Every structure is written in C-alpha cells, then in structure tokens.
Amino acid sequence: MGETEKRRRLRRDRMITTAMLPVVAVLLVVASHLKVRFPPLAWVQAFAEAALIGGLADWFAVVALFRQPLGLPLPHTALVRRNKDRIGRELGRFVEENFLTPETISAWLARRDVVGIALRAGTNAATVKSVLRGATEIWTLAGDAAMEAGVPACARRLLAAVISHVDPGAALAKLLRAILASGAERSVLDCGLMLLSGLLEGNRVELRIRFGKRSPLTSSIFDSFVVNRFVDGAIDVAGEIAADPEHKARAQFSAWLENLVVRLETDAALRAQVAAPLQRVISDGRLGALIEQLWCTAGGSVTGFEQDAIAEAIARSCREMLRDRRMIAVVNARLARALAAALSGTRLRLSTLVEDVVRAWDSQFLTDKLELEVGRDLQFIRINGMAVGGLAGVVLHPLLALAGIN
Image 1 (cartoon, rainbow, N blue to C red):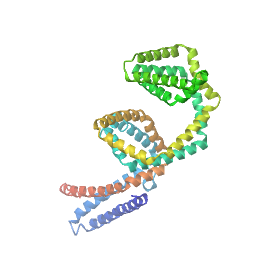
Image 2 (spheres, rainbow, N blue to C red):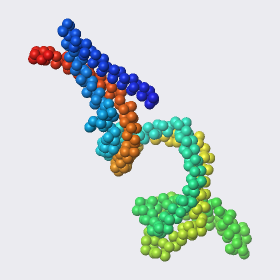
Image 3 (cartoon, one colour):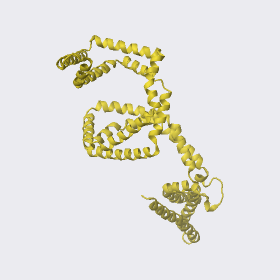
C-alpha cells in the first residue's frame, strides 16, 4: 500500500473515531433527560457516560503520543517528538542486544539452507547469465569511472608505499616455510617438472640453434642428434621423478628449499637481492604501466568472455554440488559461524548507526512516519476504549443502584 493511500485511510479512520465522541455525548444528554419518563434509558446513560470518559481518555493518550492535545503544552505529551533521541538510542541498543548476538544469528542461519538456495538458483543457466550480464555492466561502469578518477595511479602509489615497507625476502621465507610445513613442496616440484618438460619440448629448435652457435665446428645433423638426446633424457628424468613419490630428487628438492629458507631468514644480502627487482619496478615507473595494463586487460576480459558457455558451466557445477548434501550442510554450518562472528563484532557500530540515523531525522518527519504506520490501529484503540468504558458503565450501573447511588 502506498503512502498516499495510508494517509487517506488514516484521515478517514481518525474522522470517524473523533465523530463518535459527540455522538456518545448527545446520547448521554438525551438519555439523562428522558430516563425519568423511560427508566430503562438509565442503562443507556450509564453506557454513554462511561464510553464518553473512556473515549476522551484514549483520545488524549493517542494524541499525546505524537503531539500536544489541543496545542496545550501539557507535561508528558508529544512523547515521540520530545524523546526522539532517546528512542533512537534505545532502539539501537535493542537491536544490538536482541538481534545481533552470535546465538540469535547462528540460530537464524541454521534454519535456512543458504548454500542450497544459492546453488538451486545457480542451476538455472538463464539466471546465471543475467547475473553475469549485470556484473559485467557494473564492472565496465566502475572501470571507466575508476580510469577517469585516476584509480590505477592511486593504486600504484599505494602499492609502491606498501612494497617499500615490506621485506620481500622475509615474506618469501615465510611462504616457503608454510609450503614445507604442509608438505606442498611435492606439488610444487610436480608443477615445476611439468613446466620444465613442456618448455624443453616446445623449444627443441631454439636449443639446437643455440647449441650450433656454441659449437661451430659440428654439423647441424650432429647438433640435432645431441640436442634431441639431451631433451629426451631431461624429459625422461622429469617423468621418472613425477611418477615416483619416493624419488631421491624429492628429498634433495626439499633440502634445497629448507636451505633457501634458512638463508633468506639469516642472510640480509640475499634478501636485498630478492627485493632489488621490485625496487627497480617501482623506481622506473613500470609499476604504474603494469597496473593500468592489467586493469584494461581485466576489463576487456570481463566484457569479452563467452557468457553463455560460462553460465552453462556454472549451472552444471551447481547441479553437481547439489547432490552432495553433506558438503552443503558443512558449508552452511561454517557459514553460519563465520557470519555470526562477523556480525556480532559489528554490533556496536550497527547500533550506533541506528542511533545516529534516528537522531538526524527531523522530529516532525519521525512523528508523521510513526503515526502513518500505527495511527490507524491507534484509532481502533480509541474505539475499543469507548466500547470497554461503556460496558464497564453498564456493569457498574446495577451495582451503584443497589448501593443507592444515583
């Protein structure tokens, strides 16, 4: 329902409820004058009297929430306007203490299959393609705006400042130490062997040419024979190492990495040697050109990729992952814990945000918004007040008559 319709209904209900007060007052006057001739009207009088009192009391209470009744500066009226800042503060505290707690967030997320919902949405290739198209448009607009604003140049300065205060050799030592601790050096070696084999195989002709230049007295046939035998032998050795998990070369590679780590940790000259290429990149201006090139390349890649193929691949992957309910349950549980921890850590900032937003609101704006949302229900409270008051009067009437009170 739109705001205009809400205001129309509120005005109508307020007018009807307010009009009931003079109607009840007229009923009270008529019943009071005619009860002598028509004694049963004493019950009507009791009803109208109590209903009028109840209606007036509830009218005062409802109006006092938002404004001063009849414009009179009575104490404890216009409560919303006078207590706006306190309302914002208490509302922020209420949100913080009752909504943004790890227990509440975890319980809420546990009842929702967040990962499953995302995967089911991802099974529709058309939906995925629509998301990709939107992301592409956002990236393009953001990229153009960033280029115009000079973001790559700013990124170059920021990266240069970071690199200038970082010891690349020490960082490399920590990385290699982590690789050794996890046993990942075996995978690193396998990747290196695969790369070496590919480079040797793809550069046989270049190697033969270089060998021929170094050996001008030998024939090209001899050069080709020697180079081919050497490349074949190197590829065979690389294949043997890759195929044998216990090959002695693996232990030698691990020992070499360990020795390199120790040297990086203890040898300042070696760390300076590692840092030198980065310093040259920063000093000669190539870093800025590299960042701009990467930025432009990334933008071109995003706008030029085959969205249909990628959308279909994502949809197939989502369908496959949906079959693994255990994986989904584990990810949901970990996601719930991670989000609970993250959101609970921002409770103070979010509660402060609520308080600041409410404090910045105009008092009249806040009063109008609240009255617009709850004012119609408050008019029914006024009606209920008249009805309950009238029924109370009817109940009290015979008791007062028995007590001899007119």
